[in-house]
Image 1 (cartoon, one colour):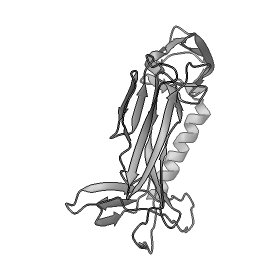
Image 2 (cartoon, helix red, strand yellow; image 1 turned 45 degrees about the vertical axis):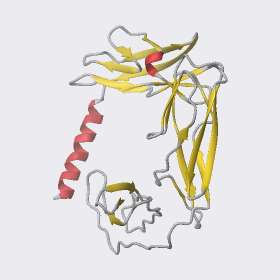
Image 3 (cartoon, one colour; image 1 turned 180 degrees about the horizontal axis):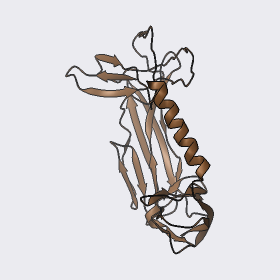
Length: 262
């Protein structure tokens, strides 16, 4: 991981390299473009999770200052009512490397009624009140280059699907929560609070896409249903208890790692 700092010593950007899960020596390479205003950088050698890792011969290979060859805005061209969408600027340098770490502001001149746009985060929120066909133009500029993206709304959602786990283990102590999301025909997420949620079993509950499974529930199949603007989608979820052999297997693995670390 590389952290960039400005002249005041404030961190202004973080970039991560590729990672390795090999158990033997491996070469990890990464390319990073320093954000505007960076005067120094610190490389951190990190391990995620438990275990032990060895690093050797870590080094920077610097190249000449970035020459931005192209600029574009990434994000959906078409959005649906009641959805959150994100936009950001991407530059391509003289080495063909793409970077979205340049902190380039993406702005909107005029935002139609029913839409909200935050230029700092690049988040476009579309409410149910937006008119079909309404749109806006996003703009970005950097080093004399400009980019635009026209974003429009569809008149209506024609289909929805539910995404989430189809197998949930019944908790043995505290209640468990599992998140489910609804997407439209463009694979864009619909605000869960705008969706009507129901579940076929009385001993579990769901609200705003969050399924709550208490302790003591019996193993069974339940059906989660979501309704939005007259459309309906369902998904079957199997509630199961952890078997004795699974619990014993996990305990054996914990003991094995304990001995390995010592």
